[in-house]
Length: 106
Figure 1 (cartoon, rainbow, N blue to C red):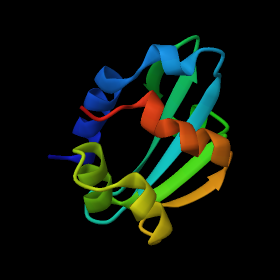
Figure 2 (cartoon, rainbow, N blue to C red):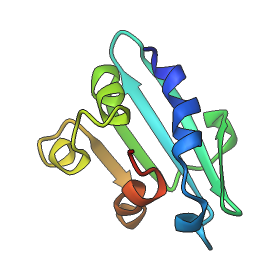
Figure 3 (cartoon, rainbow, N blue to C red):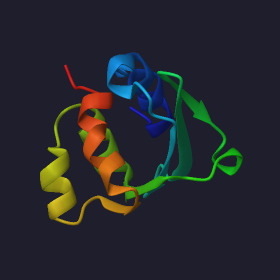
Figure 4 (tube, rainbow, N blue to C red):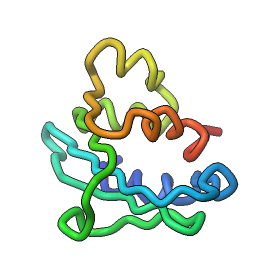
């Protein structure tokens, strides 16, 4: 699976009820072989993949492509990944804490 393919799945997992009143932008800096910069715009209880240059991120997450794919497939615990340094976060940490509710893994 490629990193870009995971974003279609992320949008399907998105929980609009958890985003009530939330208007935030998340930038993802993915490193490694399948590197790229991606941005999610959460607004009006919707989630949209947008060009990263079109937003000012409230939260920036940086991780490797392998860790991102494992995370989106439920194979990597987000809290353990953050505490072990696999995920680096800057910006609105309260938004970071909401991500598991915004994108619940099934």
